[in-house]
Amino acid sequence: MKTDTLFYDLVREFPQLFFQLIGKPEVNPNIYTFTAQEVKEQSFRLDGLLSTVTGSENEPLYLVEFQTYKDDDFYERIFGELFVYFRQYRPPNPQWYLIVIYDRRRNEVPPHPRYQTLVENHLIRIYLKELPDDESLATGIAKLFVETRKKTSTLAQQLISKATEEIADEKNKKKVLAFIQNIVVNKFPELSKEEIEAMINLGDDIEKTGYYQSVKKEVSLKAAKKLLEEGDSIERVAKVLDLDIEEVRKLAQK
Image 1 (cartoon, one colour):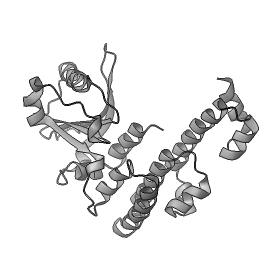
Image 2 (cartoon, rainbow, N blue to C red):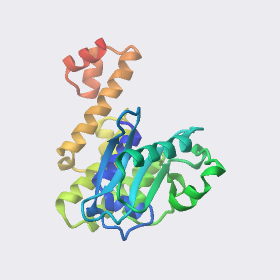
Image 3 (cartoon, rainbow, N blue to C red):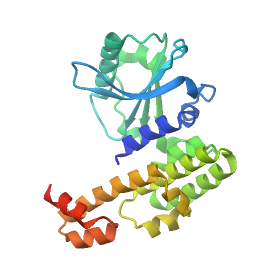
Image 4 (cartoon, rainbow, N blue to C red):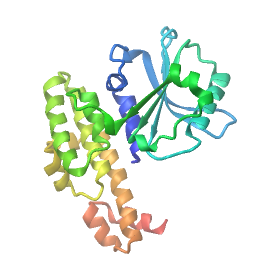
């Protein structure tokens, strides 16, 4: 699973954490729905759109973009796509914000001065590597995406303890704990189940969640493909990654 996909999962599954991250903790997450909006007759899709539900049209519209590499045309493209979306769908919201999440500041190519008015009134930029070392769950989970392996282990365990203590609802608690584990699995697909457990010290009940299983499967298949390309045998790949041998065989034939 790509990192940007996982970050969009964070916005969709835990919008309250997202609004805390961008400095708007007062926003009611229940009035928003997360969609990946196709723009008809155009060759693009807005992957992270937070649109309001019926009755809350006076609240702002949010578009979330996660960027981990330099793109000279990024702001040209995203502002252009936004206005094509506005023309086609005509959302009723009087205000909108473009939220750009960068892993590191060096991956941003500054917008051209012609966009200064949009930048001042509609753009919010977050640099994950520069987030403060505060104690909020939202900031900690966001930082987990960019921490080193050693720091990931420490931070993940801190977040697990914090979520366990602060989240009263058992269903939501398990979702957050599973998501923390999924970030680690996604970052280090080469690690075994035992190594992941040693890093973050989570119980078996989290591994039984459907969300964890789907992410783990996707990461395992990605690792399997890489091992096959490097010359490992089908049998060894299946054994090491705990995959069905027929599944690995089909992967090798693609």
